Amino acid sequence: MHLQCLMINLSLLLLLLLPLPFLLSADSPVNACRSFCGNLTIDYPFSTRRGCGHSAFRDLLFCIEETLMLHIPSGSYRVLDIDYPYQSLTLHDPSMSTCDSLVRDGKANGFVVERWRSHFLHPAPDNVFMLIGCKPNSPLFQGFPSKNIPCLRNASVGGGVGCEDYYACPAWEFGPGGGGAAAAPECCAVGFEAVRMINLSRLECEGYSSAYSLAPVKVSSPHEWLYGIRVDYSVPGGYEFCRACEATGGACGHDDSVGVGEGDGGGGGGDICFCQGWNSTSNCDAVDSSGAVRRISSMNAIFTRFLVGVFIMPIISLGGAMS
Ligand SMILES: *[C@@H]1O[C@H](CO)[C@@H](O)[C@H](O)[C@H]1NC(C)=O
Ligand SMILES: *[C@@H]1O[C@H](CO)[C@@H](O)[C@H](O)[C@H]1NC(C)=O
Ligand SMILES: *[C@@H]1O[C@H](CO)[C@@H](O)[C@H](O)[C@H]1NC(C)=O
Ligand SMILES: *[C@@H]1O[C@H](CO)[C@@H](O)[C@H](O)[C@H]1NC(C)=O
Image 1 (spheres, rainbow, N blue to C red):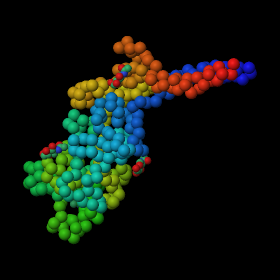
Image 2: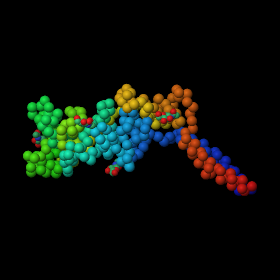
Image 3: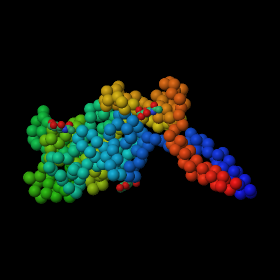
Image 4: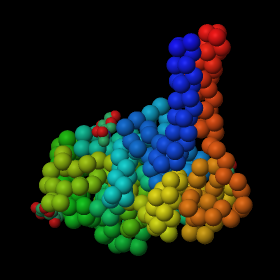
């Protein structure tokens, strides 16, 4: 009889504990839009989940076997880093030339972003593109009597990143300044604003390199430059909507039933705050305008069934067996 009393008390205790997960999930909800890929955290305004993040960055990032990839019209790039405070991404293009190798098959990605997205995603001002082996009749040089004018021979952009120094790289061993200068392709450094798109076939170039320098002081050696594409982003409309949404326990997303680039601001659908069991166009403390009833989230329902199945049922049947 003593044991049976203990069992009943235990069952009561569990029943009392049952509401706990509901309270916990209301206090510290899991952000359904945050995700992880390799060692990168994917957070607003980005997302790898449909409907999550800001619409300006929809259909942009994909997590493929723990590697975060960015897809734009010019190709796919591995995302090496997302710097949220500085609002920039660092991309890697495997077909780009570096200090150690020149790739001159004309097949490298370059950098071309959708026109509607280009307002919110563009190479950083201190990122320098060094175009290699561009033909004399390249659109780069059209209208310039001397073909070097648009090229920053000694670019001061990006703290000294430019062709003059790039020629000192091992990749240029037989290039200008090296052995067989005559046969070598020339380098033409440009900031992205000067050309608006790095399309090697349109610019009639054999290859390109892209480098940036994060150092506050000028980094003189091209060995110290960081090779990759540093891309700045901005959130149309700012962060206010998402801050308010997350502060009330929601996750920030957008209406993805609206086609890409159709909506105002170029992004597409409007902002949506995903609350527990309902969607809000402002935040989770707002009155639900659609009149939808707040539902217990399916996560809680599953958890309840788990608790009942694993703990309560055996105890009840055990209690029954004892009497
Ligand atoms: C993430 O992992 C890569 C290697 O996969 C490493 O190079 C990089 O430094 C790591 N980044 C962070 C922030 O840990
Ligand atoms: C690059 O330019 C070529 C030739 O002008 C064009 O066919 C191609 O669509 C362009 N690529 C991108 C990504 O814009
Ligand atoms: C480029 O700058 C370096 C110093 O940073 C200087 O030695 C060199 O003469 C400059 N070249 C040209 C063409 O101005
Ligand atoms: C909330 O919005 C998402 C994406 O638009 C949709 O899949 C989901 O069914 C909506 N939920 C509710 C409760 O309306």
